[in-house]
Picture 1 (cartoon, rainbow, N blue to C red):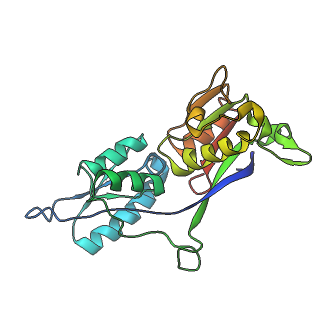
Picture 2: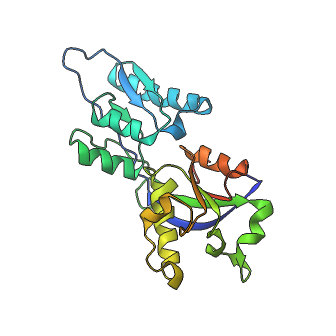
Picture 3: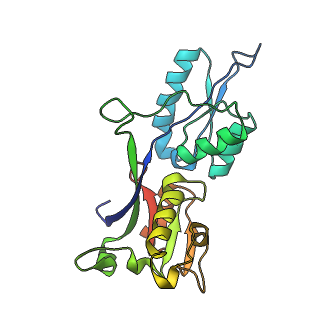
Length: 228
């Protein structure tokens, strides 16, 4: 992270970690399938997944089987179609799932240091390479102005902090300018002529979005401050 400058806190989102679990009638000893979002699917997160699996297995007396994904929508559909019993979701994924299936309900949510929901927040960040940070300054402070015309990386259009919050914040900021007065959040899903960004990439995960910036594929990118 020392190679990066973090700036422009676009939004704060309540961590709504959601999951569902139900018994399968006579098959109560069958494994419970836990579907993981792309951010928690890499090999580097194996110990985290194993620790979470053990908590559930100890509590239910049933083995837990991990289902790893490379796409947010795969995880969402796994829950909706009853191909998974558990998921660790952000707010948007939970809201989308619960709208599609009433069987998807929250059983636990992260708390903040206080042990309550009042400080259970995480941040959506826009990052650039530190050597390019001066390009994004205006009157001595970081500004969104100069991301216009750049190659930008989001996480996934189903990501809360990797798309919904940063795109809504960027759209709100630029729509105050006459040139972009009709700019909508959905306009940021693609780049090109007449668009705010010259090109839009989707990293598939928060780490992937960050990697797009590290590699130089993107000038700036959105990611959360937990996974990265």
